[in-house]
Amino acid sequence: MQDFGLPPGQVYTPEIRFVDIDAAGIVNNATYFNYFEQSRIAFFEPLLGRKWDWNSAGMVVARHEIDYRAPILFLDEIRIITWIEHIGAKSMIAGYEVYKYDREKWLLAANAKTVLVSYNHNEGRPAPWSQDLVKAAKDFGFGRPDI
Amino acid sequence: MQDFGLPPGQVYTPEIRFVDIDAAGIVNNATYFNYFEQSRIAFFEPLLGRKWDWNSAGMVVARHEIDYRAPILFLDEIRIITWIEHIGAKSMIAGYEVYKYDREKWLLAANAKTVLVSYNHNEGRPAPWSQDLVKAAKDFGFGRPDI
Amino acid sequence: MQDFGLPPGQVYTPEIRFVDIDAAGIVNNATYFNYFEQSRIAFFEPLLGRKWDWNSAGMVVARHEIDYRAPILFLDEIRIITWIEHIGAKSMIAGYEVYKYDREKWLLAANAKTVLVSYNHNEGRPAPWSQDLVKAAKDFGFGRPDI
Amino acid sequence: MQDFGLPPGQVYTPEIRFVDIDAAGIVNNATYFNYFEQSRIAFFEPLLGRKWDWNSAGMVVARHEIDYRAPILFLDEIRIITWIEHIGAKSMIAGYEVYKYDREKWLLAANAKTVLVSYNHNEGRPAPWSQDLVKAAKDFGFGRPDI
View 1 (cartoon, chains in turn cyan, red, purple, blue):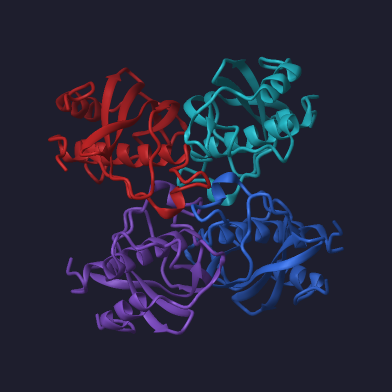
View 2 (spheres, chains in turn yellow, orange, cyan, brown):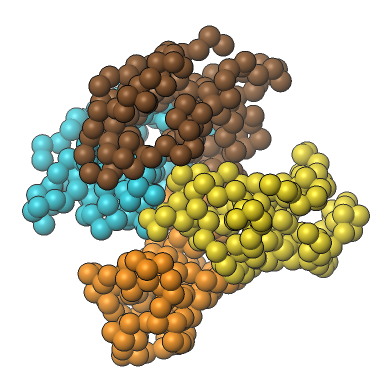
């Protein structure tokens, strides 16, 4: 199984729990958003460090959109690629592609986008992004990686 | 608390479980899709009857989009309004609005859409909607209700 | 369907969500503990009032034990009976029975016990039960109700 | 961080998802049973192989008991040790210890037991354990490992 040759935080391997499978025998449609939450954490941790103060310089989910293309089964091998599509003064757009390993290649199983809004949880209100975060994002670069 | 004056299946009251609340103190963004799944079940049950054969005449989620407008807390009183926006030969669009009771009125907390594709689970492939389902949907009517 | 003739907070009707059903087609064994959490909330709310300060006079789960007797399916009608078995200075034992409606009678589907420890979350340490809570529990009475 | 020196399937490292954390800021008490489900899968896979037919030679959970000793937080490093305590003709007892890394050593955060009953899902009834499973269990050995 060849991998994507991307920085570690950009490729997230979800653990598919038995309980993630619903009565239809596939990963439930809601559970993808738990996977994306983990993939964002995996993406931002190398950028911002494990000690980033998410309470004062946090983010909240304002919008999701997702297209499901192929079901995910319990024993599937999955990867999620995450990137920043665009960053504005107080919001950003994250992009994701979910791949499953199928007949010796990676098949696109879903793609999605999330609008994230900068939020100061201590003060309970939106706030501009910290300059450290903007710089880290610019240094990393924007857009879907070539894979 | 005045209600919406809609047919019972069109107004769904989710039980907000303690475990639905995440570390940020609000209903987790993924959990809304569990609520929508239940609201679709509540919507279709009076239309199709409790004995509908979902294995031969089922549906799968092909796309979601959602805008989060206000957080939902553990003790919030919530209602979800569900409707069919449009029905095609093999797919339909469901619409939802999530309301929370706030200062003596219902506040729009989120709105969302789902593309559902007709699916025969027994045969493992898409299929045209059954005529019974199309008729039931037409008899109910399309679009966001006046509330 | 005849009910149990018990005070409202002592009989909890869980909403069985589609997503509660796992790949084996039954409510997952872990999900029972979410139901018990809700049944405890339903039990204590009429005793203590909705404005009880759970941060200063709270409780934490120290132990569970459960016996599963019959599987719960998506369309099953379920009731959970909750009681206090015993209260000590800093802990109490809660008991539960889970019933499903089966061939025109209530069948015992599971029974369980939880040890709860009094906890002051503001101070981050165990604490004796508040006298209001002990009095409310004594006024309600202890032990499995006759059903 | 020194590890336990045990066979790989006997030490399971759960991914602690953000959504596993509840409003109290800790892994919810129910979620431990999802972790144990994964730890059993991790334990049995090397014993029985990935192609074991769980439908004809499966198992169901008949009983759990758990003692919670220390809360688990989002950034905690966790290990679960799993073993077979005892195997009978149609049931077995699994044991678990949950460790968290705390001040440079592994702290016991919870311990638990599960009674598992041999079950033929194809026929919908209990069944004696397959001799292959009993032999694999005996070859592995019983009881809590020395750690």
